[in-house]
Amino acid sequence: MAREKRPIRRIENVAARQVTFSKRRRGLFKKAEELAVLCDADVALIVFSATGKLSQFASPSMNHIIDKYSSHSKNLGKSHQESSIDLNVEQSKYSGLNEQLTEASRGLRQMRGEELEGLSAAELHEMERKLEAGLHRVLSKKDQLFMQQINELQRKGAQLEDENRLLKKQVPQMPTAGTAVAADTENFLIEDGQSSESVMTALHSGSSHDNDDGSDISLKLSMSAQV
Image 1 (cartoon, rainbow, N blue to C red):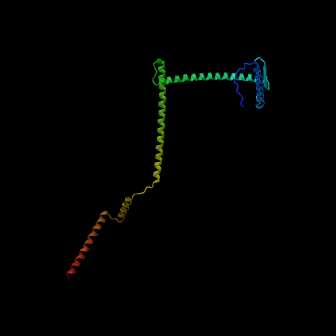
Image 2: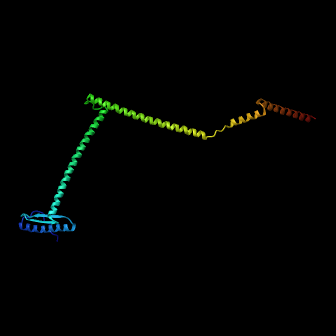
Image 3: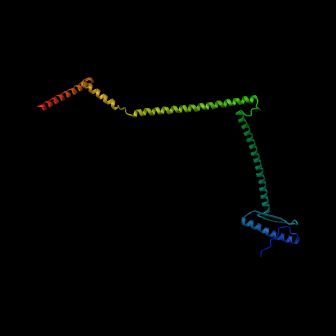
């Protein structure tokens, strides 16, 4: 049969309250001793009864645990204080950085020609000087980049010219076929002591002689046929 669960509230009967206090105190001290022995922990337990009677348990000793607790409380207070100091420092740094960011943003807008109403003549002159100095640096940087590009193009052009000369040296110089034939014919005519006109005359004469021989042969054949 399960035990009835009693509600946790003040016991009105004085005798019953005293009995319950004695039982719970012994059980609490027993658990504290077990915790100290089993877990090798420093345990201190202080209990005052309703009449003001002190009951205590300590392992290893009450003074040792109280001193240890006091030191821990002081260190804890210092750590909290240091944490608060660090937090204040971080907040001040954040505030300073936020102000710097706001000022830089305002200066950038003024450089773009915005929010110039509240500036004096001296401030406008100073801004103009800064803009001219910045423009001079931009132009110098642009000229430097242009010179680098020109030098790079010149270097590539010189490299291509060197490669072209090398290729020309590697390709052999060979004459064309028409030029060789014309040169051989000219040499042949010069060696025989003949001109182009004499060659043409000889060829024409040969052709006429062949025609005459053909005519004589045809006449002889016709006369034989008549006989």
